[in-house]
Length: 310
Image (tube, rainbow, N blue to C red; front, side, top):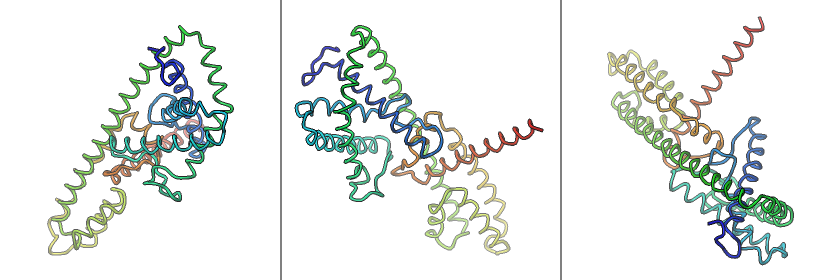
């Protein structure tokens, strides 16, 4: 298997090139995001320390641009084009599979659907030149230093680990999407109930309130509205029913936010700007719930520390 030739390169070399540059991409992005967020972040779709899009891009550059590797201008232009196409394709495929945009360049000028933009494409071109001049000689030297037999055994082990990681991450991500869908259905059911309560002047006003912020803000708005309309003949005698419905609904809704798998939590932390294409409000609620839970843990820890000092 490892001796299979692909455009003049054996599969053994291709796999280790993919692995090394996937690791490089993970180190780069994890450090960058960790510094920005001032906390350690395991960046990337997979749980392991690799970001495959970097490895795939490096393999494409090594294979396709090898004949022109001495012409740095062609390396720059070719790397920029190849990596941009790869990034756009990856973004499109992942969005279709998981109903989510994992990164978004909409705030950058001349972006295309928020998937790619000129400034990032230029970065890919410069990275291609950097790779050709400095990184490629180092990675090639490292690959050739590994004894072939040991390298093949390690490669098989790595493939199994990556495959298991990929499958578990895909399953967890699909489950997260299903959880958000269930939360959306609960929202819709609750909105239908609240329409019948006539607390709001129109369905449009209710929908606007429901979609205008997170669910905690919406429930607080309902509480305020109930206080304002208390004493009205139309609503007298119905508040207990409404309050009971709200309590029951909050419990069901919170259950979905509470049962977030560790892999799902990591993904939400790794991609803070990820947007759901059809469940964005619910994703916002989950993020807010997890944030509040972390803050509670921090406060409890601080209180315990103070007690111990006393």
